[in-house]
Length: 310
Image (cartoon, rainbow, N blue to C red; front, side):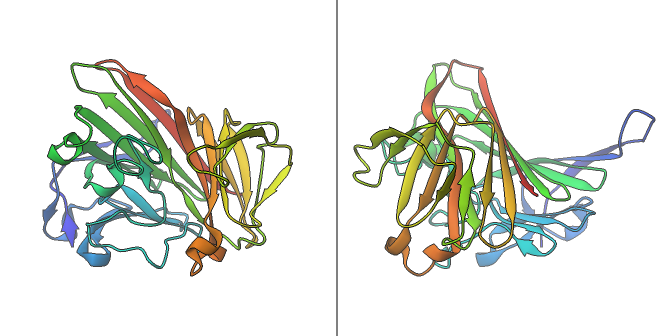
């Protein structure tokens, strides 16, 4: 087991407060599991990589790996609503392919490596808490020699994951700890388990689109005219200034509502025959910030995502 040295506090219930168990972690250490707190367990995952398991009193469960700060599983009634590709590797040498990988400080190709470095760095556990039996954990990523070799800024990224009965919520907060301004783009590259021939997305009609299928380097501008968007072939399209709520029908009998705050854009992706072994089993619906976020020293930017099984 992996466990973390902690300092804990417990606030008693009153008429205006809820039971809340809060722990703050000073680092990752190999030890017994006795330091784990209610509904939050830190253990070994695939490849012996540390992972956090969140378990709600309602029976739902989520797993996330410290490597990449990547959520790899979200189960409601024992059904996993996320998808990890069969070619995913858990060696700590390349990003985990599936779940909810981070794209930071760059979405897509650009001046540094594809989708940035946050998805292939080790995050640490900053804190955890349980409220009414529903757990959350906050992971932290800071700059280091690896990140500075390609993006020479001091920063902090906090990623809070909260599990409830039929919901999974995330909060990403990026802070500029440097003495000079910096800019970034970012996304949550969420893979949803799906039957691609039956999957569809609602809520994007009227949005401006950047279709990358003809030429990824020169997206074709347009506007979405469909009420219901399907995945009949290769799909790689950016939707700009999207609504705060859209819906995914995963084709497997589940409707997932995807809400966001401050994620201004949405990306739909399915690789079709370029990933023949598994393209039929997932679709990506990604909350994104395609335009640059500019932060002065000591400024922060925060974005929230809320996934709910209807």
